[in-house]
Amino acid sequence: MGSKARSPAIGIDLGTTYSCVGFWKHNRVEIIANDQGNRTTPSYVAFTENERPIGDAAYNQVGFNLVNTIFVKDAVVTIPAYFDHSQRQATMDDKEIAGINILRLINEPTATALAYGLDNSSNITGKKNVLVFDLGGGTFDVSVLTINRKGNIEVKAIADNTHLGGEDFDNRMVNHFRKEFKRKHRKDISENPKSMRRLRTGCEKAKRILSSCSETRIDIDSLFEGIDFSAAITRPKFEELNSDLFVKCIEMVEKCLADAKMNKKALDEVVLPDEAVAYGSAVRAAVLTGNQGNEKLQDFVLIEVIPLSLGLKLTGEVMKFLIPRNTLLPTRVTMKFTTSNTVDEKSCQRIKVFEGERARTTDNNFLGEFELEGIKKAPRGTPRIELCFDLQVNGILNVSARDMNTGRKKSIRINSGRLSRDEINRMIKEANKFKAMDEKRREKYEAS
Image (tube, rainbow, N blue to C red; front, side):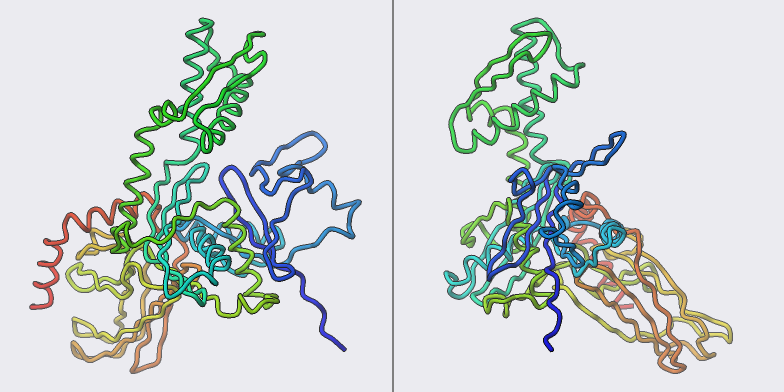
């Protein structure tokens, strides 16, 4: 008797403004359209007296369309590359509450690279360097990846700006046309939410049109107090309104290339994700559930990196690095160390975990601590302790310590305290600024 067919796992791109879902079927990824026929769905939920519509109210069809409704149990969910641990854990908790088993969290740039690698693997000879330029609704992510013919993907570097997204470009256009309306009609629409919403919708459409056309118009009937509004905007004018935002985009690209130790001439391709994030996560879901159905997926390997170095505190506030920044995930590192002082009968060893790039732990970010108790009385340097840093593919860190003489063991799972993306960028800048001073401190400690 054959085994029961497993339900398909889906890939989800949870975006700031739009979300997209895909799954693996008939040897390719299919993006699931909603009941409006749209392949992306607004990331909105509304509350009325009788119901709670979600997205385009697709939930309403479940009761009368059971035959064509697939109840999803497993999913791969994409998240921004710099999500800290608390955000990653919250994402997993949300999906578990919804009754979905999270197979894996993967970074959005990696999902995009997966989609690119699958579609272009036959055209890759040797290795290809790809830059993923992901300007979402509320955040901006850049990543540099290397893909080979077998589909192995290595993330070389990631950079981002949490305060830059497509909505910022929309805001500039909205403000420009608000002033234009006021100049023409001597009326200010800024205090009228409905008028501002309609103007914003018109600006969003105009922005997309300017991607392929040099000029477009905004025409809105009865925008405010019965007054129609019509105005033109050219691509050069749009670029002028957003010139500083474009500069920020360029700066992030240059930073990412520098971190990857690569110049722009080494890039073979630039990828602009749209459906690609959901596409890539659907591929990953198919691989993890064994529902590949295609030899193209057999050799696909994802290799991601961590944004900041991980280590522990030594005597004198010195940072001992165990996992360097941009180390490939997952990774497991062990080291053996001893005590700097004589151990009495009731002593314990306190383990403090940090992330950052500075020589002193006081300049880095504290993640957590625990105590290894029951260390036997012994002179300085005699106790032998084995420490293990286990960093999972989801970016979740487990730290354990074991007394090699007694076998006693203690561990900690880092559940909070990881840095935001802005803080990570700030710490990297500080590490570069004080690099020479930190190297002298390390040399002094090692010589002591």
